[in-house]
Length: 500
View 1: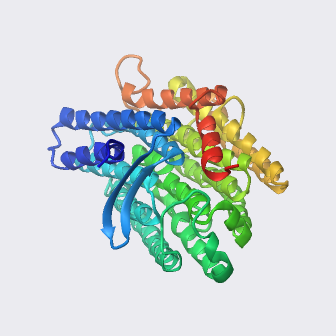
View 2: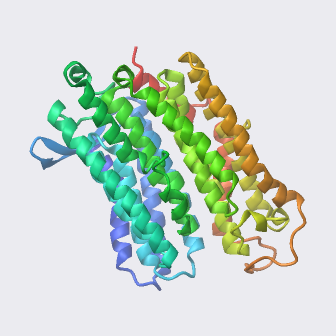
């Protein structure tokens, strides 16, 4: 096996091996479990950094293992893979730190962190998939490894949420499998190819390809929370805050959106998809999801449910960028994959801090909380401004390129969707900031914990949201610098999707 083939395998192993060991650790082995978690996440981040530099300089990283006759398990790292890999590896490290602090006194920590590591293994497998079969296997492994995290608390509400999540994702997986098998019988290959691999089939199998596209999009659209497939996501907010952060920013929802990118660009090819007439309906579904999620968020008093419906809305910006055929819209959608992840994980970290420190779960309980937890609410405020799309936070960059992409494609209606969504974002986020910063605090918080001295909360809970809030600002302020998400999204569009 050539040297460059080992790096993708090592990226998988850096979370797989620690996760398997952690399952067998006694609960009292705190330091061993912490060391394994942090070592795995740091090694993964360094490996991804090395591949980032290599791919930028045109190096190839690929590994192939026999799986079925004529079909291999293929891991291949390219610019698009690295966009998702870098997001997952970077946020996994911060989420690991946060989870260590959040679950310090909780039971079943070895089980939690074991599945936590396996979940990240499945996520990076999705990112590095070199063909549709490999993608399918890791995508379904992601379902199996996140279910125990959703039901981790063991309450009746958690079990019910887990059942709904499993029902949605298993049915979606069956449709994804059906579309994959049908496509293989027509094309004889499932290998992801720049600008797709079905162009030669359009003339004789037009309606079959349209049906396959629908099956594949529904199969991944459940995890991407496209309407009407989104109902599992708000219910899954009964999970602990680190799991919510994982679902929304690192793994499940992002894997669904990433799958849509692969289907449109690497399976069908954006030009063939447009010729088949499937991109316009996809854009309309994305637009409806954007507005629906924002409207539902307006009426949620539970903070995590409000953030969940916000995710339903925000992730479809990625889908909208993909479905508007053109380089600038593609850049806007791809860069939002990273920007939304960094901003949304900030908000979920902060929501977890409020719950863990003061027992705050409802928006109506947040009066004056900015005075009690100023650093947490500063990070939350930066994330909010980014979600609304205010400069110089990263969210503004995403919306700017999506708007430019719509104009480049000769479309004006997406501009109204983006503007309407921003107004709705302001309508359900700014009242939270008003309560937190300008209203009088109550005489007592619902369930306050003392972390000693003048600390507003544990440092392991405070550090991650401060880092991600700072990142949200920095990648917006310095968006045009080398190796930023924006510049990498441009590189992907130029090298892979819109070659001259």
